[in-house]
Length: 217
Ligand code: G3P
Image (spheres, rainbow, N blue to C red):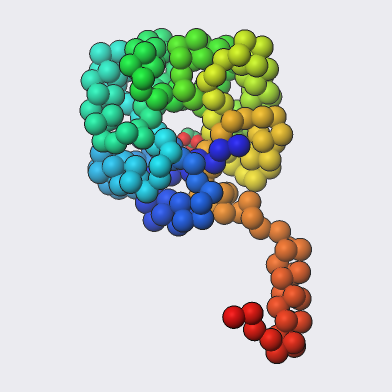
């Protein structure tokens, strides 16, 4: 399973990229707003920090506008992935960009039928938002499972990029279902490593090691 980080905070990305665990980055207009920086500038910086795909989202609502914005965004770096909304115009742009060999991420997916359309449009990634479905008392993980089955039934190569991840259990459950990628907020990604028994065990080992009076180097 690939791990993307869902943020436009370059300090967080730097820290996580240094662990070697990061396979890509996703941004969206809200995350750009939160960064307080120019979109093109921050995305260009992110593209230098990670080798994998960096999703940059178009904001036009029509095909021509999306294509113009995509043309501008792909100039930033080779690892740009164009994020498009799950609308008919977005799917049309997805097909056109995929045919040109541009990586695409179709976002704001809330149903299996939407995911089926994105795969037919040649999307590199489909982003089902599980947390926002959970917020409405609809089981977000069921959507991931449905998409997995549909894509496997037909051999679609579009990767399932689980988004709107809110906690560590979301990550585990997406991995069990077989999502290809999870895009995770930095704090949740860092929380995956934590276990109280690890901390307790390490503390005991360190105390005993100190008593030996030895050093390894
Ligand atoms: O990047 C899209 C998605 O991950 C947003 O998550 O928490 O705003 O629903 P959230």
